[in-house]
Structure formats: structure tokens, C-alpha cells
Length: 191
Image (cartoon, rainbow, N blue to C red):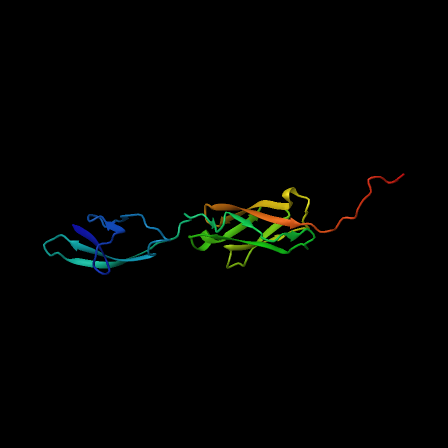
């Protein structure tokens, strides 16, 4: 008949794990969080034979915590507003505004894919290694004659975890007028 016990490598009791003394099954004693707890636990399992000889043995047990996609991206601002208007004749592919998210997860769970809801714009991450920040560019010439002379649209950030978690924020881009239209007469013939 064997009896099992579990200790930390320092000889104390583990607050995170416990063991069934009859069969040696190790279980979680409390929920662990990849983002706030340590990521590797070094434990020692003791097994003692319950005969008259009380023979025993020990083994090291290393428990590595893996990240679970439990944190959605969070934008650093709820609305991104360009302070200076952009000219309506701005060339295509011009940088307009930068957006940024934070994600407490790691690896693919924190890599971000971006989208914008207005087809006059597109978005690109800073780089393959820095996907939490992105730049928005104009895809075409803009139009001053839109309501309030401002483009308003959503930007969406989704992580690459399974399942993917998403967040959105608002973007406002004011447009300034450019003298790009010739005057026109109301009638062809003036009497």
C-alpha cells in the first residue's frame, strides 16, 4: 500500500496543486492564470510504502502553464480622432492615423489582425513582429462633401487565438476643402 504527498522544491506545501494520497493523482487546488501567476511550478512527489519497512522514493514534477486565449484585445482609446484635417486631394496610400491595442495573452493569442469598416481606407500593422499597433491609410482620394466633412468608421482588432476575440474602436478623419472644382453656370445661354 502506497501513500503519496506533494511539496514544493523548498519543502513547503503548494498552494496551487494537491495530490490524492491513495493514488498519486495531482490536481489543481486553485485556478492558475498565465498572465498573473508564475508559468512553471517545480514540485516534488513523495511516495512511501506503508509496510513495516516504510520504504520511500521521490520524483520531481514540473508543471508548465500554457496560455489560454482568455483576454480580448483592448484599444488604448475608444475613439481615434485625427487632430489636423487631411486635404481632400491627398494622394492615395498616405498615412492618416495610428491605432493601438493591448492584449495580455501571448503568442498567437496576442497577434492581431486588423480591419476597417470604410472602403476609402485600409489598415496595416507596424510589422510582422509588432501587430498590436497599426497605421490607417487612404485607399483613394477623399471627398470634402461628406456629412460634417468627416469620415467616421470603425476599426476592428481580432487576435489569432482559438476562438478569436475581437474589439472595436471609432475613427474620425476630418477633411479640408481644396479648390478643385471650376465654377459652373446654371444655364448654357444667358440672355
